[in-house]
Image (cartoon, rainbow, N blue to C red; front, side):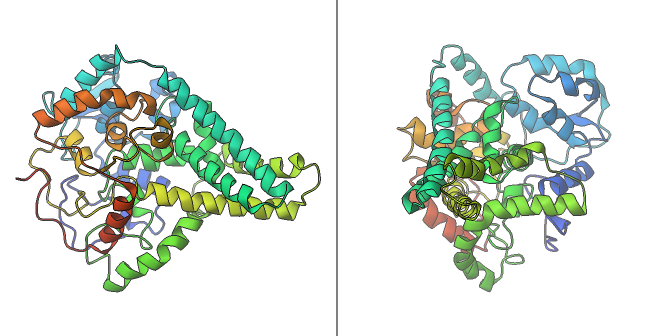
Length: 435
């Protein structure tokens, strides 16, 4: 979407090219980033240009991350996805030259700034942290996958509304917990994300590479993909008076069909442009297959198809109720166009774009299924959610040192705030952290 009145934001010196695309997708976001990033067709980290071509298949985290970021600036992603100092030492042999032009991103990662200070303390803390909660995360994830198939089967076998609803909730939670795994090296758990008709490869781009690095900015694909149905940017040029209130009416519809839109968009883009479909896009079909064959012929194909689609719609609705009201949208949270904090540290920017769910912290299950511990997850996305609670002491210590605050509220307050943000058109003139 072209913003004629756009002025230089606090995130980048260029308006993102992908927002001018007729169809906004993860692939068009990548194309735009390659056009904008001054990475000279290779990989850019800070002011250095690197050629990782020979390293693609050697990358311990999987070839996907390196292959899909070619031609872009990966500075923030590199820092956030590597807690060890080893990668920083290793990449030197792949450097080919200094970049010809300055970075377009204005956020900083100074050695003694907030994020790098916190990162060093987290590295030290993890040496003595109990790792057993990771096994609990794995158990919860597996249990939810099995529950999804079980309730789906029961809903078809007995034409049960209760089993259908429980199956939809289990599917929603399965998808959310799978998100715990796709920031890391390739693993089998991440593919369970696809059961909801979305795709882990597409979401590694839209969520891990875009939203996690540039939340609530024009570079955040998860902000753009819902427009014009839902628009959280406080800009009157892209959010008319009518659209602001109509979004409250269209919101439930958008929630219920979000999963289907994801699949439909990717199929349409593959047919009209470049194929972005994978073998694992067939995984959602495993649910109606289990319904049909597991019911031993007592349920017809038509019933299984109906139950599966209804279950997916319930999951889609629940996913959006949880996900879009999890942390990022409230009038008090930084959005594109609002006044910027004087300290442009990337980690402080993450804190400014999030209000945590304080009502989840007592339960690892709720944290996993409701995008909890959101600030720490944004700062250290490759860590299992089960390890994050142990990091709060060093987080609070570092926040106090840099005069920043971790904000919290409950889910109802987030839902109210998210709807207020849909109506907001005036940028906040008060920078985060201002006295």
